[in-house]
Length: 420
Image (cartoon, rainbow, N blue to C red):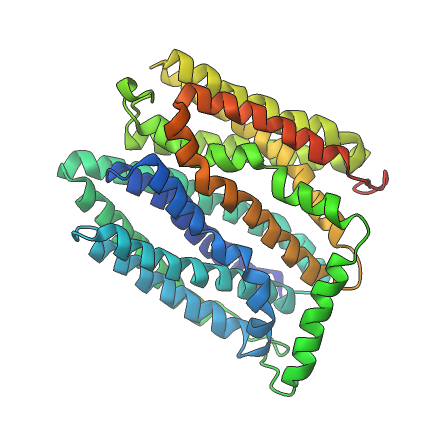
């Protein structure tokens, strides 16, 4: 593969990988809240949508065995385009909640499968040098997809709410646009995605051998040294953030008399989807630079503090209920910057723990536990918030930060890991 050829598909492929995830996990939450769904239901249903990413390692071997990665990419992009159109059609329906949730689950499984195929295709189509060369490109366009979904599309929906005077009609148009974008990406990738010689189905692999390898992968993972402390870390390191991410949007939307900040949809799109993502990205970049110079173990505890302390800005916002947008934006930027910096330790530990014979498969299992650690606390976050109210809920989040410190304490990390 030549570099200029790779440039024609890597940016759009990883944009197409990031956008559905944001639409399923964040855009859905904003839409349901704007459509009058309660906080408890919003958190429960949208957290459940993360389940396909939890069990993704279970069917990844079959994506590798059946058809080609190119086939799966194109098929899933077409299915995603159709699924977003289905949501757009059914938002105005009387039973919109049940119908759109069914479409969102279809989209979630399609998106998770697309992730498997896209990452595999990237490794098959490029040499190791080219993979390293383009890693920044794929990460950048994944972030741009996040800004598009969390920022631009939410801002668009907010503007359409004002122009049309109808929340359901505004969100229906937004999802039609998202559907059209994916149909366009499917058409584009149909012509530009290469056909690597080693991207082919493997019908010669016996099912018994596949199952043996499958179970051996999981057996070896759970036999790793320090597995229980590692699992606790994977599941609970982000316990505060797993709950916070399900309730910060309802907090921004709810009116002052209900304990929220009463922001418009457009303002939320700018605050969380633009400034928040920029803060997250900068924090992540600086975290990577720090670890590369001194190693993960040296920066582990500063990163734990960074991911925990900034959550206190929500305690301040819930008690003050300020209407100062500059102050609100600054608080969100600080919290997201700290999260990006602290999340670096989490992702690098997953890589560290995955090292060994089944490195790729073990990393996929780790990401499954990562998704589970976000899904389970997120499901009950709405019920907790409704019982406690926003100020006490955010104090509860600060209390949960103690768990982050406890599970980190038991980790054992090579002091040289992460250094140059």
